[in-house]
Image 1 (cartoon, rainbow, N blue to C red):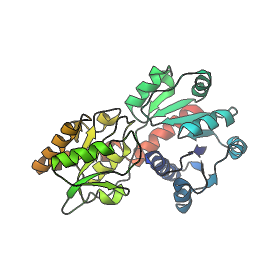
Image 2 (image 1 turned 30 degrees about the vertical axis):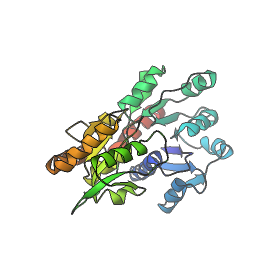
Image 3 (image 1 turned 30 degrees about the horizontal axis):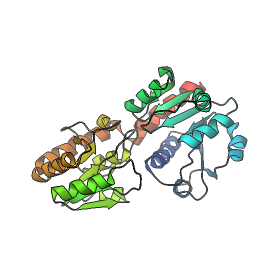
Image 4 (image 1 turned 45 degrees about the horizontal axis):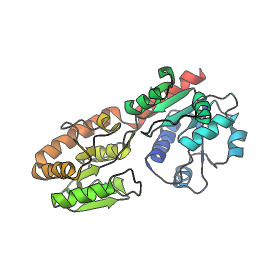
Length: 299
């Protein structure tokens, strides 16, 4: 099977990491892929360095290449639009990772009729698609994945959050809650490294399709506190694989304080969370689910 992957992102955010992981999983499974991404983007550079076939993204190149593939897999909204225009009879599969609802209108209706399948990142996102009128038969849930790595060892200290400028992420809320809890908060741009030594990972957001950074924390063995929104509760089961909180300063501060006072609780949450990720959120499992979706539309 030959698959053309498209991602128009100019940053290496959660969605781009998932594309990168999928490229590796598909290569291991013997699936031939080519990635179209903006020239010089982090994903473009990282994929080239890893030996994947990559081409600079442009509408003209997409139209030219599309007919040589069995299907097109679009990974973000702009890619979805371009694939819908360029497919010319080729099946289109679209990954949907965002929590907000689908807009209406003539153009949007046409665009959302084109894909053969939508791969929703969570049951919550699948529900959003159904609310928009997408037939359940065109929706599959394919969860994000993270690499299997050793959990952090040694002393764990401090509270960690994601460094981001996204206004939908609760950076200010995390700052205020940490201050009220009397702990130092560190914002990280290198989660894979910093999670190995963090005592607590706080993931606050006002909307979320799933939260792949949470999976990274769980794999690293770091206890998680997260907002009770969107698809997050599908990962963080309260008092089992983490703590869920409302998006209020007092609620977040109380959760931080609880884990600071009860290290045994944090250890138990982290252990169960890592075991869950190792069972359900591996790259091989994500790849297999994606290949199953591909076969539905090609065979």
